[in-house]
Structure formats: structure tokens, C-alpha cells
Image (cartoon, rainbow, N blue to C red):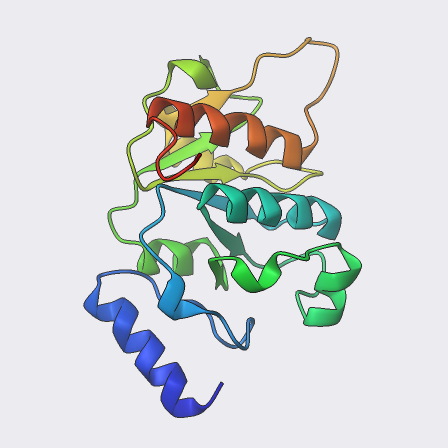
Length: 190
């Protein structure tokens, strides 16, 4: 992507009041085809490329945007992406951020919901507005305590047996995403 095209892409997002994709991490996004997503999936410091691969495919087929908060436990270069099985990567509405503060700065007013085993409200009892940001923690540690403190009323959980730690990240994303889409009447889906 040429420098001029990058500037045009950034300006397009600024004019629409949206966060521009981090073009340093994804060299040729199809920004012209990106529409306002019904929902946004945010992965906080994901560690396993196969999980992110599965989640990216889920995002593409549902029209959700994927937001990755660094540091990542893998390289999202095309070679690494293919190795993780991301055959839909070219169609993915992807945004990357250097850290949580960068995410907040580029998404002012974002309605944020944390998916966490520390949540007190079942995911089916939350009302997800269009454009909501569903945040999932890293596979080995979940979300940091400061996020729990910042969004105490927006922490949701997926009910499961108490003797087990958690679901696989890609499964948890699919469960919550499809409930939110169901509530919205599965917008633009067949």
C-alpha cells in the first residue's frame, strides 16, 4: 500500500469518526469494503495464533470487526497467518493497537463489555447495543485487574462447571458473539 493510499485510508476513517486500522501491521486491508460492524471483538494480548485464526474467521462470516491489543504472542505477517489457518484474513476488518490506552484513544465512547470468569452476569442477560465492543483476555491470564475495576457493571460470564478454569478463547468468543447477534436479529446474516 502506498503512503498516499495509507493517508487516504486514515482520512476516510477520521471523517467517519472511526479508528483507522494500523496499516503497519496489515499491509493491504480492503478498507473500501469495510462497513460499520454490528459488533466488535477485542482480544487483549492474545497468545495463540490458532485461536486468533478461528476468531478471525468467525468475525468475517458474521461481519464483526476484530481488534487486537498488543503485545501479541505471535506474528500476524502473512506467513504466520497462513500457518494459523486464516484463509479469510484478506476479508477481515482488522484493527491493531499498541496497548489498551491506544485502543481507548482510537475508540472514544466505545461501549465495552468484558467476558470474564470473574463476571457476575450471565452473557445472555446483557443487552448488547449495535457496535458494542466485546473484550476477551489472553488465554493464560485473562484480563488485567485494572480493566475489571474500570468496568465492574459490564463484566459478563459464560456459565460453566466450577471445577474448570475456562472455555477455549475462540469458543468463548463464538458463544458471546452469536448471542449478541441473536439479540440484534442477526443483522445482514442469512
